[in-house]
Length: 325
Length: 256
Image (cartoon, rainbow over all chains, first blue to last red; front, side):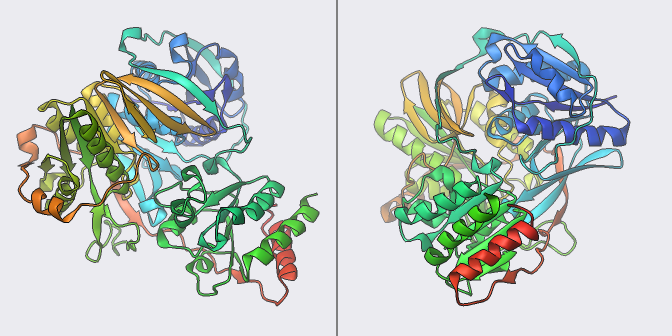
């Protein structure tokens, strides 16, 4: 019978990504409720040394698939390797990150294992011995409680939502042969162009300062950049601002952009169209700054300021600078 | 080139979503239905490939009877023909069943490249493209923002967290479209007229020989948690209000 809670750890350039520890901590919690073990699959080349870090967050066993074919990440290779070790061990639950890589891999893997997958979950629990995965739908306009009738029961977890909890375990390493036939791998990474701004992705940011139509133009965003800098955050944009060409598409928050859940979301000159609200309503704290007291964004805000953002934002930057040093 | 674009009909992004009182789903009476925005990028890219390289664009959709409108919209944009998989047994199809239906259709027709939206904006699961690729045994390129066709392969740009990847894959493959790939065209009036006469093959699950039992089930649909009412910071002086917000963020919310 299927047993154990598994995670597929995510590493890039030889370092585990934060989502891996969020996965490990969450898997530990579920496994403790089921009286089961936590195992991690770690794929890449020359990455065995990372296993101990997973142990710190509650992983009992680490299955290391080490091959040059697994570095950098290529969907086909990772899916083949992960499916092989999962089939051999028959876990009850498999968790992945709902990061770009995790989303790409999890759906392919679920297809290979002919099982079900709940994407981008914000909560997972055990109910009647089964995984109950809670996930936003319609970009957060409603939520679904998903159960999977096939095994393994798979879920991908939204980054930045699940707590990291230290709980040292052995992380005993088992190496396995990923059995990748190079002829089956049809994709090749030609180039990796790194964003050198040093900014994290919106989906991983703790603080997001977003501008909307009220920014009046691309130059208006400068004051948001300054506020984000002080708060060590990122700048986002509404669909209106992106469609107007003021900001890049990767900055868009909302139903046709990114769905984000930072600790602090500061919306400046954003009216709060329903497709935007859907993308940011799960933020822990929301501040809205807008001239229009009737703007729907205020209904979602913890703190609202009805005033000219061009006057308020620079003052807020100054006030925050004083507080955070 | 034989190009396929998969489309899904979804509620418009401006739609209010109301959960049914018994949690069995959403109220769908008042909804305006549209083509999934990410699928529009896929259809547009398919049309551009055809215009440049010749060939045919086939639209494939799985959905209830009303989804035919979305197939016709894609035909009006310029696609050549459609396949509409419509069957009440598929009303609650999950990603696996949907991908199985698409795969069953596509296996029966020639294809060089298949476009899907990177996710549908209703269930937001983003699984169908990769699962379809897996079921067809071909590579997938997800979240694509740029595509160059080179005969037997494609080169794409795919943004990931903090970087952009340039990837090459041999054809056939599945490409999932992300915003930024192109600017989808509107259907022209002559396009709409022509679309009415273009062939659309309607199939049910039995004709495709697929199992219709989903692997996952939404046991309950729930409204989003209500946010506690917020505070409006009053006053005439922007500086004072800003200072108060900063103080609250520091002392009450403890997020800065």
